[in-house]
Image (cartoon, rainbow, N blue to C red; front, top):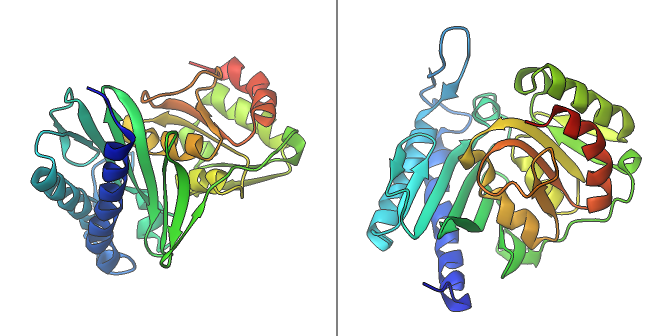
Length: 271
């Protein structure tokens, strides 16, 4: 099977619809009674809300109606036909801790695999009215308040000039990873924490330069890859290899020169 430009454009338009459906399920519960429960093991807080579950269910229902032969992998409701030619990979709310804290940096991540390769993705923040969507073939764009503009990463020749981010250096990195983060942080100009996948979108938009994460699942990663690459950036593991869909350790960068400097430290903690 060949994925034509016409078919990809059709799926791109459908991805916009999926984000509208998920937004309708999530927004009434943001900064409201969201039905928080803890799905973590003893001593490990892992929050989930009715917004997480309801958004993924709404996305799955729309997929079943429009593309019943497509597969789905979601954080909340598991796998369905994961070996299909087309597979949608969903994290309905990436940043549930931010969501339950009332902070508008959570996002909805939706990626699409074709024959095992992620080809299309979106990072949506409906509370602030932003949808970052893209692919290598079509490029990436920001859709906001009825307007659309292309996304492009910015140049950053040296790590000391970089604005960098990670979600939680204390909770997400083990000892060696934390040491690598500290080394990169000490060189960089500015670091931000707690932004989850919204920081990925900021790299695509040319606002930040480098994001480092570890311990990720496929639904944490796949949607970002086409958006970043479509904007001219790169998504690698901590060895500098394209991450694809495997999760684990992640580096998102807008400029290879900045990334290469960071990899000097990151490779020592690579798994």
